[in-house]
Length: 449
Ligand SMILES: Nc1ncnc2c1ncn2[C@@H]1O[C@H](COP(=O)(O)OS(=O)(=O)O)[C@@H](OP(=O)(O)O)[C@H]1O
Image 1 (cartoon, rainbow, N blue to C red):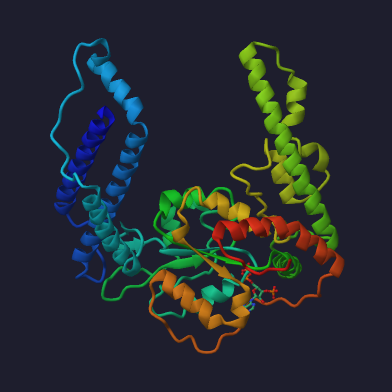
Image 2 (image 1 turned 120 degrees about the vertical axis):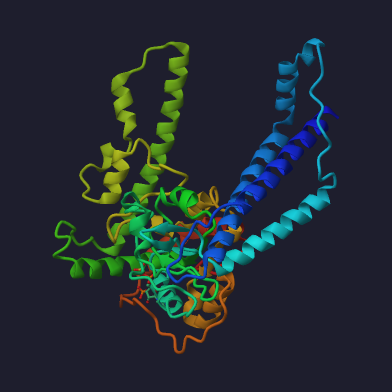
């Protein structure tokens, strides 16, 4: 009963704050001054909606926390008011405005519908910069490498309601984050207008497997939509190998320090070994850390030499390898900096297996964004029915259907077929990972079994 009362108090506070925010934001001066003129009201509306959206999210989170911690808060209030000692009870307040949970639910749905409508017609976040209004992307193709991302980007760039960018891959959230948002936005056509609404997007396939990207996007592009293209992991790995040979040929001048990889067979077997070592090393590391904590708490001495040894479990085994993938792991105290993502960027041929471990990557991203913010595209459909894929994407982004004309594969690299024995080894390797992915997304991608 007391808990219920406290929840009502929290609800009342929530409604008052939201009401106050609506009042305040409706009084806000115009924030974005667009070049084209005549869109000030739209900018203001966008600003109000975004502020509202943020406020509602914050309040809901707070409310959620409160309802979860009601008992704890109740105890604290009792303590603070002295009620526990029989001095006086908790403070009384007015009844909440929404007494019926259904009313609140309907109100929430209405606000959500308004916000969603705006999200499909206006860019995600806009802000004034050098007398212009610049906007951040509404959608990002986050991966996977060699899964048809160039194809998708190429055709989306033809859609009249998609803003032009000067480059497909901007690498902002993985490699150039410290260059700042002003650097990033300069690559997109400046657009913010209800009369001429365009969506902004880019495609950097390395975003999905970089352990920092999801968190960075969470703080910068919280409402963006993410497109993840996925290809049978076995074929994806082989495609990456041949791509890397071509990449090294084309970039001899730019990257003379990067050498040709060994055979696909050797690279794959070594990577399996590396990952196993990584996993084992990581488990060992965690075990030893626990032991260290235990010793510290018990006031027992800590063996510094043993400490050094387990700090880099990977290092001892792979110092002779000249691969960024190895080196990065060697520099880490543990192989998995965040989630289960193996960070393998830095060389076109590294992480041929790691980049195909879709479940582990998506699982980590879902700590930041809900499933509804993602569209998962099956690469194999590109070949069989490209129109269908583009329709799926348009629908997801809220774009009208567009006639793209004839479709042609993009970024193809000729390659030899895979040795059947090696293929089987890879099929077996990926099987449990694929199964986890199918369960997570409730969809069978039908890849080699
Ligand atoms: N329409 C269509 N149908 C079938 N396959 C297609 C299509 N478009 C692109 N592709 C194949 O996609 C591979 C390139 O993927 P990406 O563009 O994502 O590569 S990259 O990560 O940007 O380098 C590359 O695969 P491989 O040729 O096996 O390397 C392309 O051939």
